[in-house]
Amino acid sequence: MIMGDHQKHRILMVSDFFYPNFGGVENHIYYLSQCLLKLGHKVVVATHAYGNRSGVRYMTGGLKVYYVPWRPFVMQNTLPTFYGLLPIIRTILIRERITVLHGHQAFSTFCHEALMHARTMGYKVVFTDHSLYGFADVGSIHMNKVLQFTLADVSQAICVSHTSKENTVLRSGLPPEKVFVVPNAVDTAIFKPAVNRPSGPEIVIVVISRLVYRKGVDLLVEVIPEVCRLHPNVRFIIGGDGPKRVRLEEMREKHSLQDRVEMLGSVQHVQVRSVLISGHIFLNSSLTEAFCIAILEAASCGLLTVSTRVGGVPEVLPDEMVVLAEPDPGDMVHAIQKAISMLPKIDPQVMHNRMRELYNWHDVAKRTEIVYDRALKCSNQNLLERLSRYLFCGAWAGKLFCLVMIVGFLLWQLLELWQPVDDIEEVPDFSLPHNCDEDMLEENPVK
Image (cartoon, rainbow, N blue to C red; front, top):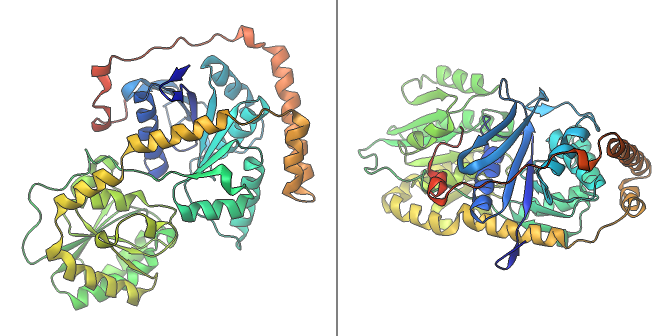
């Protein structure tokens, strides 16, 4: 069906990471899906079960979610089985009459397996990479080889920044012309400045992140005491939890900063804005970031941002809204001092209005729509033509990948005989009245 200048798509979003878990990938999938629904496309999400949340659920705007009864193995990822998901992914694709499968996140095993099976069945697939990876450590080498295998036959790919695109092309060997850059966005209807900005001589610096090594917690341990020593009127609020939390608590005890460093622990996403608007400066100390949605949320709430100059972060905000520093304690302290001197010139409402112009999910959805159109124009290839792509993945790895795909193809053919397509009932479509979901982005997403 043609809709305006674009074809109407039936999209299956696939990832291990979705609500009720919260994070950047989860938010991205949810908001993108809602805006695609508003554009008239059919969108379905498939993820693994979360606790008792299993089966089919409906969310705001009529978004249908399949919580596949597959339990997470480690770090919310399902156990890699290669072929365990084939029957249920096939059933979902046929029942929902899907035309494009869209996988998210490089270290989601659910995503990798779904992409592999969809290509085996001849569907067009799109992959979005949300993270940056290295090339030297064992974990990165392993993940890069898996990504090379998965993306060898992908229709199109999306990255959230130009730095992320360069990283993905180098890791996967994808032709650059197949990779599009579509940034993240922020819901400015939720993340808006406080009516009355915190006043008085006290300056509050807010940190909200997972307290893990990648987020630069070891940098914070050195930066916070020095900033407190130089500026007696500065106070820190730290939201988040993780294995590195004990390092921050030890620092607070060592330097007697209990009254100046407040540890909130884990912060629910619905509470993030209330934490942000209590501060003046947002501090991001990440050692690697493909984009960093947290910076957008802080800027939308009118906070001046201080961040490490890593990954795609320099692409996110205009120069007047962020102070960048090298991931070095001395340089970060200097950047915080510069930000403090800039505070009198900052107008939170002006920053919010600028963010509303620069980043919105409807624009992201329209740009993703173009990628889907390109994916559907890709030519169909038979098994032998597809196998030739995997042979370029390495002398031994290429042959192994070909074997994996051949076995998958044979299993699919067995499923076609055991449960023919005609025996699988298609799901009837339905749509909510426009007035039921026109304000969906302002509501609580979890139903």
